[in-house]
Image (tube, rainbow over all chains, first blue to last red; front, side):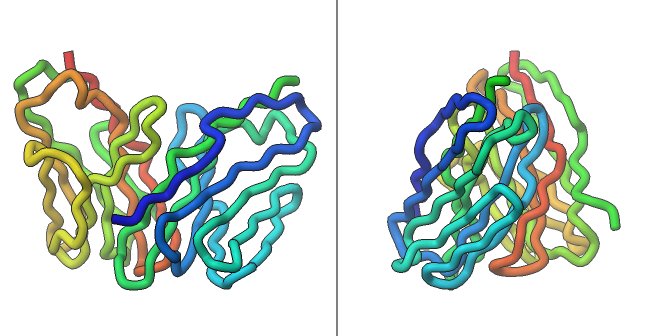
Length: 111
Length: 112
């Protein structure tokens, strides 16, 4: 079955440093979604990428979808303490309804 | 528009017992998925229901089961609870394929 790997599992950064998490799928995806889960909370949708090579920005967050539609990344510029949480990618395949989540990257931002 | 509602929020059960968790999706959403979340394990997919039919199932033992009603509300049941079943159980609803998932607050199950 489809597998989505995400690295790193944990990342500690100093406030103001950049942060990147990477996602790789074993199969070609029809779309990739990113979610953020704050400590004690539930995952909240951030964005969806659909096109090969697509890049989207949300303020300090930049999302990329690979040319082969098998990998993706989330980059945060100049992290803030409000960025703390676990970031998950989730891959969707065209025929299956199921979203396959990566294992998540837990981000800690040190003030 | 009300969000995804999961009940109960917290539950403590004894080994060997069974438990039923409930999820009410966003109005109009017919797809409901269930996930188990434990520290360091990410979101493990349990199953997905659409129009009262189970469409996908994750790699969990048969002790884990679910169903969906005609109003799209869903329940999941875990029988013969084990200590390792202690986790946060999250439900998510979607409007359709390739759309975003809306998660409920989750039910935190503790098995003692």
